[in-house]
Image (cartoon, rainbow, N blue to C red; front, side, top):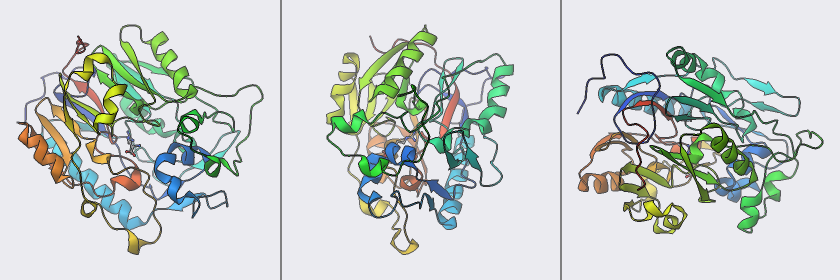
Length: 381
Ligand SMILES: NC(=[NH2+])NCCC[C@H](N)C(=O)O
């Protein structure tokens, strides 16, 4: 299965999620020892954290939610395992710089403890030969991509194009709660005590994460769940003229890679049949593998470690990373999925990943595939 990389590696080229992977950026977790649970964080993770908000991460000023060091060490161990597995598959693994220390950041309107560059899928989309940096929802993430800049400059020097969506101010009025209103959810518990400043006349901004997109050659699926996202979709359409962007109407609160993973042309992994209706017509007739049921014993028990909040759902492990159309890297702690994929003829590379629900990311989130062999193919007709 390991295939030699092409003699002179191409500059940035990544149009899809499944053609042969040659180069990838893999995130890192050093100094990920707290979640800064301000309003922007609580809203972003509301679907998962709502049940515990009242108990702890409320507006009482306890905004920094510590993560026990043992869990960060174990996460780093699992990421090292992922790096080895990718290298073993012949993939060149690039890493962001480390923050080196805990970093507190301050804008004119708020302050936050910076999030390390772990989920590198979220603040960038690679669209062919273009790096597109996206405008974060979570304030603590606003400078995260600085640590990817050494790698981005490398690709830029080799001919990549590089764009950034406008940086949001993320004031008190910037974020749209329409997704929750639509679902009749009261988010006042997340927004009470909001202390960020306001800019008169600004209102809702362009706010969007790369992980709201799923790339399929010349087509890109884009999850739009509120006006922040709507503005971003317009930006994508205006600035990237040669791809087709398909609006998925509120398929999820934000990211969609724990809902949908295209495995190869005509075959996708989907969280459940309820999500089919959000997809473009052409994809509704694709063959589907539905996420098999999993069991609590596959998730660590944190009860003796004090308080930790799962910010990710039980479906995080759908979030696999494809090496090619027949080879996938899957969490070894989701044996039910491994079995189904092997039954469908996939070669599965199992890698252990314990704390996916605490850090909000699986293998797709932790990686940004910068070089794949596919081009702007039309997979939807
Ligand atoms: N790119 C990512 N960070 N994706 C993670 C998506 C997690 C999703 N909100 C869930 O809880 O299942």
